[in-house]
Image (cartoon, rainbow, N blue to C red):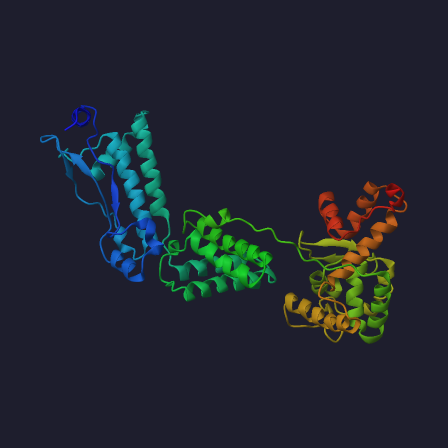
Length: 451
């Protein structure tokens, strides 16, 4: 036997007999005899077998008589009432953390005068009179325990219902159906992935959501994937706000770069042909388009208009926009002259319906917008226009025309200041970004710079 081994053995014995050695082993978690970090790689049978066993926190403490570490009673803490890995392991991690703190604070299971529960309770009762470090650590135990006690345990089915019911109260009639549709598609994917809806909501992890978002990306587009991520994050934020989950982890999932799709602007020659065609073939759609073009409204905003929203005397228009409850705009004379037919009509009638200017239409605004979008599709087909042209193109086109006409007389800042009053953009930065997006701002001819 080499001398170096003997020296190392002496060092080992010395260290283990050193009076400052710990009186306990670091608490560990028993998870049914499997490596919890390889859970996703286990077969369904292996996972089921592991969950059929009791999980617990265990540790050893040095017997004051023998000086040897002795295994202590297992601590389950009610974790085994949960039938899924995520919930059960979460409870045990909190127990393990709390046990580590009280052991470091000096708790001994060999103190026959006080149990673990009594020890913690006594320390917490004395915390107001003690400023030492150990008491502060015990406050952390109490805070973590209170957090656990205040957490509402819901299964996936009930958690989703809570999220949808809450969002139904705060989202408008146009946004909520899209939100609900995306959540239900995620729920369908969970079922197809063998998730049981009666399992605790905490069984859904960041990894599962990323996997689902990848399927959305493969089947659609980066933009739809990002929108799905936003809606799922909104749902999980409701759950966090209601103490159903501890953290909305979806906020940490990255947003992919997505090239926005926008409607192209029309050429001057195309505008005249389309307006002439609409005036002759479809007067209702023609006036609908003019509200978008001359009042720079979005199609959905035009669908919200009622007769009472138009003040033909003061030439004002009141519309609910996406960035404020009610937006007031002037009605330009070029449009006012076509609204004489509204005199004498009831103020509660919708401005646009399939068959009349001013009438009743029992459907939501999203369906009304889709109706006029489909009607304009026939016009696009007539002129051979591609998918990048639409009703929104009129708004882009006429804002571009107004910008270019103003730029002939005023400075760039004056142009944008005047245009901002017309378009209704909330800030100058928002308008500038919009103008860049639609390529409204173009340079003068720069041929001389190339010579």
